[in-house]
Length: 122
Image 1 (cartoon, rainbow, N blue to C red):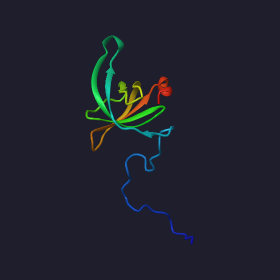
Image 2: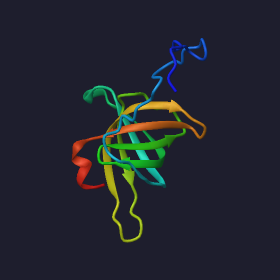
Image 3: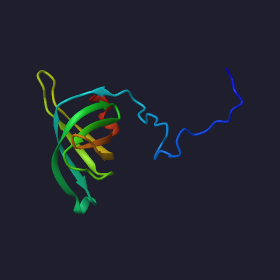
């Protein structure tokens, strides 16, 4: 049944951010679990600083990784993620850049854009 009534907002409050959040990922993510050692690197090559930490892994795809960190990580920080060997599977290293970090219930949720060289490892 069609009416001629004008459209109106149900509430006067306008939500912050995107009212219809769209998925930014272009690859399907696969769930992953476990802990990984992470080295964060920032600064210019001649004065680079490193910090060792850990990630609780959440999901992965060819071009990204989702994880939880107990400490915030600054956007644009370069990271190396060391995935330990498990059973017959060998370990491997992933290289990328932190693209977002938000406070979550279990720590800081982190999104890492992986370098292209990683695609053969996933």
